Length: 366
Image 1 (cartoon, helix red, strand yellow):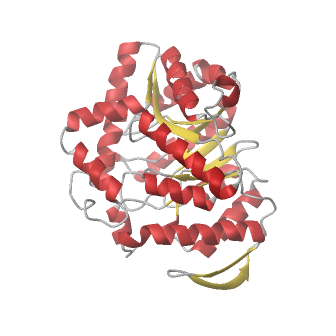
Image 2 (image 1 turned 45 degrees about the horizontal axis):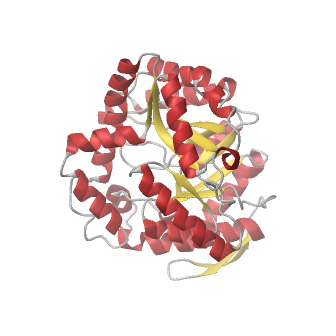
């Protein structure tokens, strides 16, 4: 199994200078390759302390120069907030700089504060994402961008530095709603699974996506990449307490950023699934925290190995990305969390056989 790590640059309540948060998360990213993590990831968000990485491609360009072999993953680049042409250029530049180490993750965004900040209508996010993805992906395959759509009109121009290898098989998208999964299959890209709903629902929707992917593309879907918030401790009770504090604390930042406690998503075009999701959360806040925690990975090293393996088997996945610092976790504790995972969890995951050997019939190739 390929094992990666992600940094998310959180500063809940703006209790510290943002610069200090950056120094500490960058130090964690610097530890990734020496500890044996095979990829480094970050996410795109704007304007709040939820996640302070407005440009993951810029961050990963920096990490490309500080690493030798680690893959560099975007989790995700949010296309409706960006000019697709410039995004294609940035992607190609980073892939050239890093000698082809980029794993490209794409998304459409769901935070009202971000759409408002960019002066965009959330109702347009889905068609903007589709057009943007078509422009970017076609451009990376052909070396030029030319497009005539509803939201983007682009005369033909070359991408320089030119893409030197295909992004097929290494492009993924975060998909929460069933409608988004259909779009990803039609675009010919894989799924990046960030758990927010029961695993049995995710697995069912992924099975439907795989069927559609094969129908549309005539070949098996890529195996998904799974990411999760991760807390590991030698003591089971202490692991639970830390998970409640930090993974539960992270969930509170999700509620604050996405405003799930409000009703604005119920009638928002393109976000019908999120509206139902938010309605459920409003009914039992404490239960929602525990529900979110249990979707993630926490416990003793043995428990973490078992949970990640179970998730990977259910999804037919050979890639796991852990997030080890969240919700104001002190840097020393985050580092210890990451080091214990690398020492006591990662070896067992890397020793696993490929998904098709672990669970025949569970993977895309079947």
